Length: 71
Image 1 (cartoon, rainbow, N blue to C red):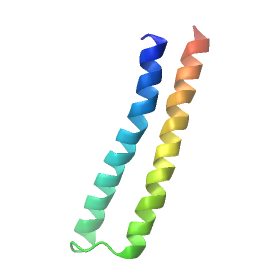
Image 2 (image 1 turned 45 degrees about the horizontal axis):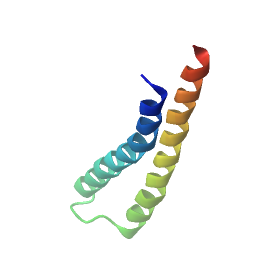
Image 3 (image 1 turned 45 degrees about the vertical axis):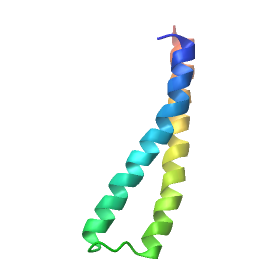
Image 4 (image 1 turned 90 degrees about the horizontal axis):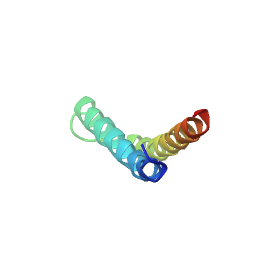
């Protein structure tokens, strides 16, 4: 894969992954909490979203860097 395409993937994939994580975790919490998600859980979601987003960026750019120099 060309490096420019890999960088575009690095920029757009982590937010998509973080949004999917948020949707699944919110849906799971709604099921287990009877349809009403508590404020405490919502706070955890907002912090968790940014943690997942940051980790996804680190992993994506780390893989790109590794694959670029491993050739």
